[in-house]
Amino acid sequence: MKALRAATPYQDNNGQVPPRGVYSGPLFKLSHDWPTSPLPPIGKTPWQEAIGNGPITVENASAYAAVLKAAVADNAKQLIMRHDQWDAAKAGWYNEPWVGSLREAISGTYPAGTFGPSIFPGTGLRATFNTHVLTYYDKRAAYSLRDFWGESSMKPALKTEKAQFQEGAIIVKAALFASADPKVKADWWDAMAGAAAWSLYLPVGSESKPQVWPGYVAQFDIIVKDSQSSPTTGWVFMTLVYDKDAPGDVWDKMVPLGVQWGNDPQATSPDMPLKENWNNPKAPLYSTQTLGWGGRLTGPNDGGRNDIAVDGKVIRNAPNSSCMSCHSTAEWSTTSNRMNSFLLPSFATKAAPYFQLCNDQGKPDPNGTVICSPAPGSKEWMKWFQNRPGTEAMDPDSFAVDFDEVFSFKSLKLWWAAVGPVEQVAPMLMRTPAQGPRFNQYTGAPLPKAEDESR
Image (tube, rainbow, N blue to C red; front, side, top):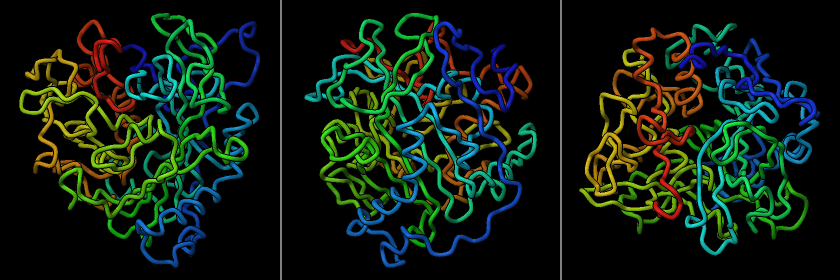
C-alpha cells in the first residue's frame, strides 16, 4: 500500500536496482516525451493495400499479417535482438505512465502470469515459468497518451473522446518467459532454443531478493487502429510467437500465431466457424495449446485459459477468453473508480477482486482460486464476446478507452491507488497471499496452486 501511494507517473522502475558489481549494463528508461499534437492523417497503409483496401477476412488475413509485421520490422529487430542498445525515445516509441512501480529495472518489464508444464504437453517444458511484458506506443498512438493523461499524468481526462486512438496508431507488446525455478536458469524449454534473451532483475521462486535472470522473447503482439479493414471494432490484433524451426534470424522466427478483428458473437459454441479470426496452421505446437474459446486468438502469455467453475463443476484450463474479448472490457467508471467488468467471463461482486471466486468443489468462496463463471455460450458468457466499437463501454456508468487494457487495467488503477482517498483505495487493492489467493498481476485472474495440484 505504501509503495503504491508513493508511486509517481514517470518512475523508471520499482526501486530495486542491481548493484554495479552484479550488473553493469544499461537500465530501462521510461520514454514519455509524447507528441503534443496529432499527426497528419495517415492515408492508405501498406497493410490495407495488401488486402485490396477492403475488409480483412479469414482468406486475406495472412497477407495483412505479413505486411503489418514488415511495417514494424526495423524497430522490432532492434528491440528484440539488440535490446541492450535499444533507445526507445530516439526510435520514436513511447511507454504508458504509472506502471513504473511494477517494472524491473533492467528491461522495464512487469510481471504477467505463471504457467507450468501440464499446460504445454509434448513441448519439452521442464520448469514452471513466469511471464513479463513490455508495451510500446508509436508516435501516432502516443499522442493519445498525451491527450488523455496531459502533461503531468496526475489529472487524466476521464472521458471517452479523450481515450481514442488515431487511425493508423500501432501498439506493440513483447512478452518474455523466465524460469520460476531457482535451480533452472536456462535451457528449460526446448521450444525456446535460440530465442532472444533479455536480462531481467527479479526475484525467482520463493526468493524475495531479486537477481539478474534471463527471459526469452516468446511472443510479440502488434495491434493497429484500422477502421477501414475492421469497420466493426476498428482494430486488428496480431500475435507473433517464437518458432525455433522457422528459417532466418530471431525476428524471422517470430511467426504469426493468428489475427483477430472481432469477437465472432454469432459463434456461440466451440464447434462453430469463426469469421473474424485467422489462426496460422503452421504455428508452433506450444502456441496453439493456449488458444482461447472456440479457437479464438490468444497467445501463450495471455491467460486465455483458466480454471473455472460452472454450475458447481470445476473445469481446469478451460478456454474462456480471446485477445479482443479481453480488450473489449477496456473501460473505467468515475463512480466506482475501477473497471465494472472483469477481463474474463465471471459474476460481478461488490468487494475486491470484484468478480466471484469458487473453491475446488465449485462453490462460491471468497478465498477460492477458481473463477465462478457463466456457462460457455450462455447469454451471460456472450457479454464478453460481442462486437463493440472502441467508443462503447461494456457497462453502463463507464467510459470506453478504445480497447486499451493498459489504460483501464494498469495505468488508471495505479493512478487511483496513488491519488485516490485512502479509505476508497485500500479495499480495491489485490489481496496478498496471506489474505487470500494470489492473483495474476497482468490479467487479475487467480494464480493456480502448486503445479502438481492445480492441473
